[in-house]
Length: 366
Image (cartoon, rainbow, N blue to C red; front, side, top):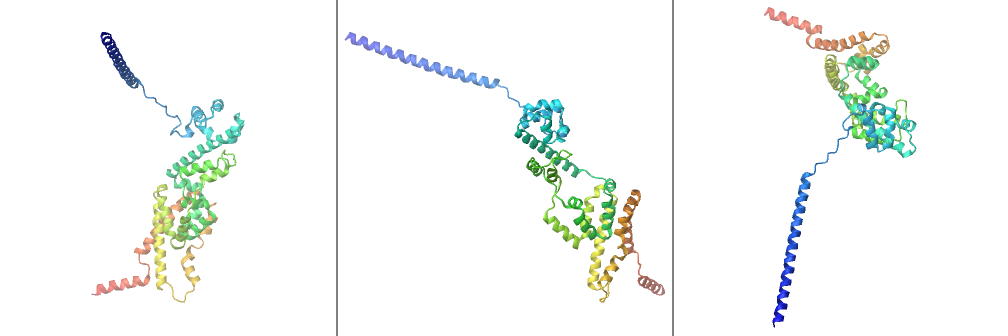
């Protein structure tokens, strides 16, 4: 019995010992975990944020790139670090890069892989397309002086422009059929930067290199503004029914080029439109011509005094000095406006003057 009691006590003691050891081990594990968490938290507090340096070519115009910028572009944008040494060797900066094409890389760089040449050419055309978009946007915002444009485009301003004072439909017809550049300048929609970039990427392997360093077809895709069909239709409708109003709107757009002549042109086209519609109205009412008047006499009556203006302008434009052309360009719209005002306020009909005199005499006799 005593032996059994001793054995039982030993078992109980061993159980208590194991339980104590387990509790101690569990407590130590919990303590270690807590200590590990504290160390992790302290480590997180000690971690400094990683700063990624900004690319030196971000928001920097390509024409202002240095050799280091072109080297960065070659290393990280194109991804061909093996050619960066040749960028430094040849001193290729931004303007030089824009003047290059794909064949220049093949000639001056040790390119043996055809895919490298294609990729370099594509990235180069993307850069050129981006610069072209920014140049177009800047040129749209830049105001051109009227006299500088007149000196550069003498025929367009002297012959076509002055003819529009007398025969607006003739000027619009000439522009539509024979002056595609002026027509697109008036009605064209410039390409957005995204579409121009897409065109540049599409033309990367298409354009034929020219002396200027860009592909001919590539230049056409980017520099030629497109004229939507609805604008062409509106142009033709205005040509028939409202040529002076169309030219008035275009002259109003050009007011910043000259704040003296262009407002006079706006007023002149507005008065011409008013005079034309008034003439058509009275002709429709039968107040201008007799019913038996032939059509050719009506046309001759309206345009006979200005019929020879376009050929005279065409003959004289290479002869008349530029200074005299500028003076006439200023005097013509001002003179037309003064004559129109005189027709409104000064009675030129002899019968109306006689009636006015008789009315005055009757008032005096009364």
